[in-house]
Image (cartoon, rainbow over the protein chains, first blue to last red):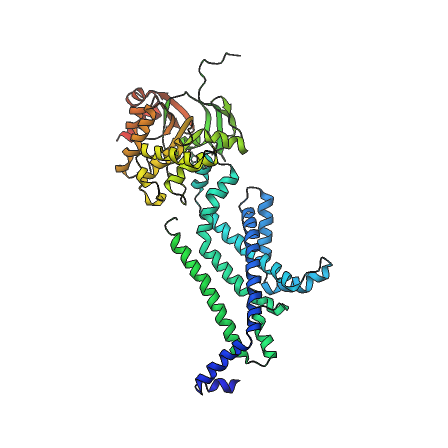
Length: 234
Length: 250
Ligand SMILES: Nc1ncnc2c1ncn2[C@@H]1O[C@H](COP(=O)(O)OP(=O)(O)OP(=O)(O)O)[C@@H](O)[C@H]1O
Ligand SMILES: [Mg+2]
């Protein structure tokens, strides 16, 4: 393989053809891989957003116990490498004798718990950017606490954090590949599967990387769009 | 027991005290405001004017004493407090319009969410109020697109939309460029003339003379003296008021 790379200009058209063949002949494995990546990503993203919003709310809660619980969770999980969290769920969790869960479900739990801490911290930073006067004005017209939060504070906090929040989800998208190391057949596992079919590893990896770049570029475009759109509001 | 006075005050503070740590920021404050009255609160920086104003709708809590709005004691938290706040309008120095909502939505939010008004009715009410304060043409813009004077007039419309019994103003013109002060004061003078009950923290003597029934002078957390604007500005009795006036008249 090294020798092949050393002569990159040898019949380039053939080579390109071969690369495309690698993709087309194994489309099944590619699509399964990316389908699983998409499922891991979307499901973890939704749960992380919900859990993260709750934890972020706890972090700014006037109740000290809530604040403390939020802080402990965020600090412990965020300072643990993702692979360790996966290790815990894939090898540790089954030994706890709790309900048996499949690898993809465990992967989603690991990704959710990990990503939620970033969502919470990003949201908390966003809430802190909303001036105190906004909450006071909301209270002054007679809005109760929960409505002040949901109608006035959170919409502004979400707008302020949209770009960094999308960065959190871009990281999540990349982190889904960690699941490959733990027997989940997502996109990161495509290479291993195709090597078994005798396909050149480097070509496969390049294709996988290419699709990831496209996906991340897509998310970045959305991020850019929101940055532009909400500039006026802030 | 003394008998109830024939007309009870709309706002009544009785022996109100508040500390910020060691600082005794409100010292035994007694103040009654009757319906339709316009009271101007004046005094040096740090004397507790904002704190007093904010205590009336409980944006600041108090340590002891009591505050009554239309005879009802201020509830401490929850739905009741929110309901009572709907009756007490507030206009802030820094406007505090909801930054993510249009001018129209700023005014309709309270009527729709707090008073359960139908959106169409709230819109009509808001449009009338915006016309009254002279910013109806800006209805679809966001607050950041308006001048300070326009934003403050919207803030007044937002307060009026709740049909409050009293409106509190905390230095409503001190964040404004000089050329915009009058457009806001004019709206306030008009409100006063229509009989709105108002508590106004301001150093605008022109407004006080034109619209106020009473000037309350505060210093170091105490109400030092109160009088008609004419009497207070031409003939202050306390030494501290004399000193203060000589400084701001310079
Ligand atoms: N949240 C707070 N915590 C601690 N001290 C405070 C707080 N708010 C106000 N103070 C202090 O209380 C005192 C009175 O403040 P207040 O804002 O009521 O004065 P003011 O008369 O409105 O002054 P200004 O004319 O500058 O607005 C000041 O010394 C101020 O520093
Ligand atoms: Mg003040």
